[in-house]
Image (cartoon, rainbow, N blue to C red; front, top):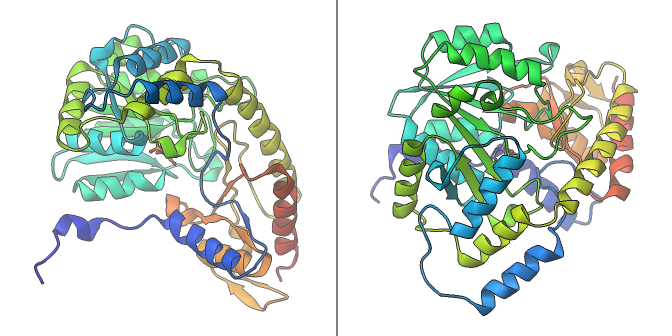
Length: 401
Ligand SMILES: Cc1ncc(COP(=O)(O)O)c(C=O)c1O
């Protein structure tokens, strides 16, 4: 048989999907499983989104669309950017993709040559590493442990940018930690970025509408508008609009970068489908009551989850202020044994595995995100499952000896 490319040898299936598949299998075997594993929002967009799609169907042109994105969708995205305080962009600054994941992949293709360095903080969203490896970039990880609330410091950033990576990839609010940078923190990091003009900065901020406690969403461009010629803002409808399956992602940045992504689109996907584009325009330009209500609901769920975690001895969890994840440090369990089953817990992967087998709760090991002391809880499950799932986690830790 002929060989596959070396590139595909570097691509790995998602670690999150491995746990999700195991949870699915146990469920199919009749086990009572509560899933805190996949990062899905678990809600649907408002009726106006479906209505827009019905109308689009009635007027279906059956044609290929624009490589950049449908006009109405781009206009709606420009309005959304203005709502976030990101003003002064035109359609020439925009590009779209089949989800933020494809936009990020295209950006990696557009900005990185073989062997160029991409730097990003740890914990990171799993696909950052996989995408970097596929395009053969060198990865520089910037460790941000729980002791520093999983956040990058200006000193760390300074040291990293002094090495002139081609790209800095930054994620706020964070998956997997849920941490959100304050205005002052973003401003201090932006001051450092301003000193290093050779580095592109991608801000993957797809959870920007899921921010709690009045902290607000802040971007380097808010702090220093002149960074607009190097900062590329990435967004998506997946999480904040409850539309992961619609596969819509965006970028706003320098015209050359947007043009490069449009060129890649013209060779990969051609365009987003007409129906999807109509849905995206309606979601962004229409009533915002669904995302707003969900944000309030997630904040309340965050509080409930944090209350349980705070009651477990040895578990330490920086308080998240956005997205829908918590990322507790559970290393207190390592080297111990789960009493009732006699199973030993050596690390995060074993912990998640025993927790799933013995308590029917699926969480993702932190090592999938580059932080093996922790695990990720995604708390968007139906409300009646949330506290029973958290109680099982508390019980599990109480049973360790
Ligand atoms: C931080 C982050 N960026 C990007 C994505 C990809 O989103 P999309 O569904 O738009 O491809 C995800 C999805 O989990 C994410 O958490």
